[in-house]
Image (tube, rainbow, N blue to C red; front, side):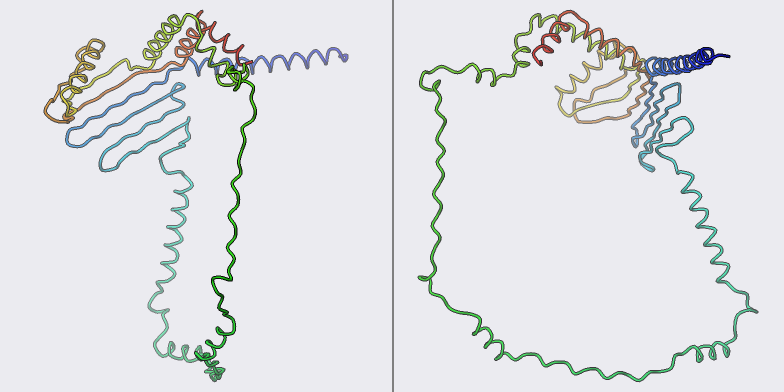
Length: 322
């Protein structure tokens, strides 16, 4: 095989590897965009509040779940494939605890000797006498110096302290205040403002935002964007039951009006009653289940950006930035 044949084989294998990497990246992007984020929330409040939640993504490769109850509190666990990143006790800590238990058992068995091997009282007394160190003569402590008398302290203070009259102390003169004179400006005398100052006062991007055309079309496109985002985020199944009160009859009425809007969307799964006498939340049951697809949210944002008035406004802002 000549050199050109070897080079062709090498290029062929490099192309196959690059194509495999490209297909793998496309598969990952497809999974990230089109794999839904499933979420589920359940809770109730009767005698005491409690509940649980669960979130999964990438076909269950990433899972997060948690629960709450008054006895155990809040518990959260995060798993990526077979690895536990949050919550649960890691294996290393378990191994350390097992080793510590084994060491404690060994030390306890070593300290408890049998009765036959324990030494008698006479042998213990002889061992103590042998182990007792010989008494050493006590060293004579050096005499402590006598504390200085009060007369000597007064003489030292009289030597070091000198009285000074107040007249002899010269007060420092206060510094003169610095006067800043404003710079001369011809526009001040003529009454005309310079063009540079007006430009510096308002940035060009702000002026372009103020003078944007077709603001009505931009607001309508923004409203469509919000509707699409809410549609992609709101749950598919929603069940709420309970008696609610805010303590204010007006806000409680607003709450019941919002519940009526949800009833039109979810039907009999919304069973909310109002308590206009006090602030309360009694016999509450909540079940929420839904999914979020990132591809749909990305499409909603791109559709907003590619709208004609939004596209023109963005182009003008880009020019003003330059």
